[in-house]
Length: 310
Image (cartoon, rainbow, N blue to C red; front, side, top):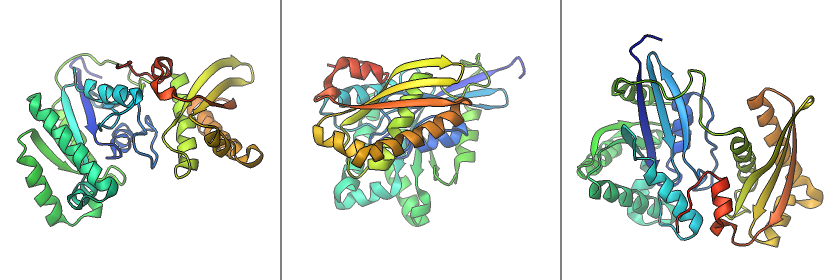
């Protein structure tokens, strides 16, 4: 590393399920944010860190921006908009197929378009500028993509437009090179080998939450969270105790499964990934508790790394 270092902070924003976490993971080259089929998987701001030569790129993976209802929702949306503050560049990612389907107001696609339009309006009101990344380009014909890019450009908030597929890597090289080129001179914010700012305790909870959602994404609603209660380093590895909070008794039964088999499968999947991430044996113990209204509890939100918004 030469004496002329550069560092750029990039806030990655977008509607729920636009592909923000998949994009950040791909740009960092490692898994720093969990990815599931459920909307609003990311709940707090997580920073993923990449290095290109003398440039450190810090990507702020933010929660999806949507119309909030619960205290949790308000805290997540505040975290997303707060991610822009202090960032050198704002990158708005839009799920291109879902946005175009939204013209027909069909289910989630219509909501995705409304959420994206609301974000663009928010940028307008703040006199903000953003880089636009149209995601999932492999699912659309090029003429439709070009027409969509032109339509969105008319909003007057985008300095540059990139067409990407966060999942298969199309266009990511150009996007990363562009952001690297825009990095201002300055010291690096993190050590060279650090990939994320997330704590081990929160990372472990996020891994289990991902396995929970992947296993039960159709049966279990969004009313669940995971907390790491205890973390002890021992001669035989790390001992981790966690609690899965759900909102109703019926949900507890779903998570446990017959004879506790579903929870066992979730725990095994989480333990295997944690062993790989931590590089040591992991002894994982998971409990399930019913706690109505947990999404409005300040303590639960703080444990997720969120600021409490009234």
